[in-house]
Image (tube, rainbow, N blue to C red; front, side, top):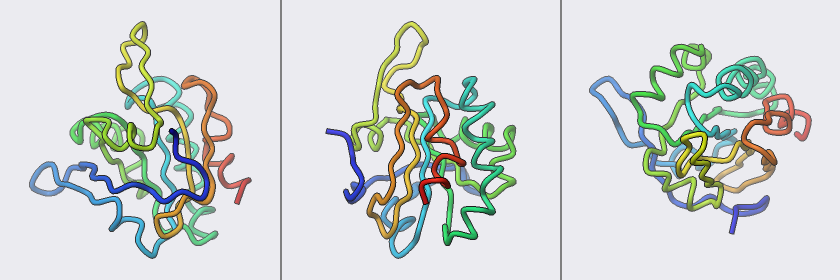
Length: 162
């Protein structure tokens, strides 16, 4: 069953690149006592993810901050090396967006947001969504009907709902 508004996020661990290589990032510590936006994409370097979804959160980062959001996190079923390079190439890292890898799709599967599209080479990937999380609880959740769409899950779509 997919996560819904009002649900608490499950325990999860992501990876990101640190000064000495890949390091674990505990989701509970990222969200405890904080207001966080988490958005997920089907894959780093894929079309809509690169040209629309990530740029929408770069454009709206300051507007989220003005509404009390402490951090914006991008999650993808990719390894931390890819997430680091993608964050640098899109400008997301420079904008202060955390680029976290869910390499085994553990979190994505736990929240029921996984899908597989073999013709596109996407196996155990994440649906496109965005959520506002307050102290670990999902307050707003926008899930796109298709991985190729980026409307309600874009930065502007989530801001409009706040």
